[in-house]
Image (tube, rainbow, N blue to C red; front, side, top):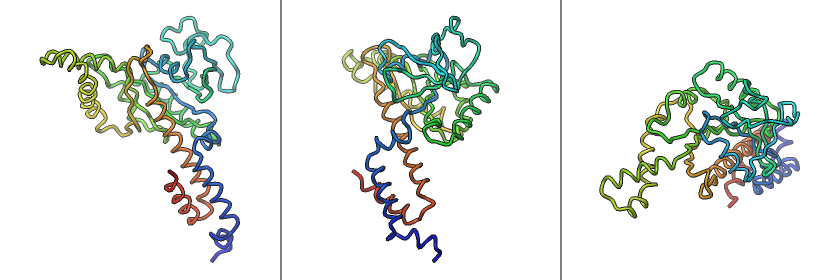
Length: 292
């Protein structure tokens, strides 16, 4: 037995302390996530008019839409204009992607957003900027500085959703950053399903009741066809509707985003203790599965 193995035996104080610390972190996930990622860093992608601005305001519970914009070195921009809006003529940032810039909302301090500002798939230059940004973020020393999740907003309010330009994004790897495909404006698909049910002879009550499920099934066929053979499929799918009304909810997206970040934190914890001992790693694995 080597000296290193003796030092890290399961009876040693160092091993016990390591297990205790890891147990405490695994047993209090929200606190641990806050420790490693004080703010969840999200890259928001999607073509203009995909509902990104509305989504961010809903996620951060922003009633006035006010946000703060900082450069990559932390300098606050006094007059950011409307960086997320389709019309950028009044913005001093017009003509630049500024994907490095950080967008935060005073109404919710849990998130940092980076926006592609309408950067649409299909351009080699755009993909180069995107890949360089993701690579740079993933090489940051601390987990809190890295990119945690990518939201790709895909509006489905037409008869030709998920075109070649949108799907081209999934041909490229994202350096381990999970991608959530967010299908926005899904109310259009529900309305279409409702009209089809009515054409099939269903009454109004039946059609209203069955339309949401039919919309998911019908769109699921499109989704399965388009994502069947992509090299880098999304980690999760979210369907959003009526986001510009009080009935719209981003709760599912919030939960999925936080779960993906929790997985990243757990991976980081295992990475930190892996060099100590295989026995310790196994013990922590058992502890994790015993937590209700």
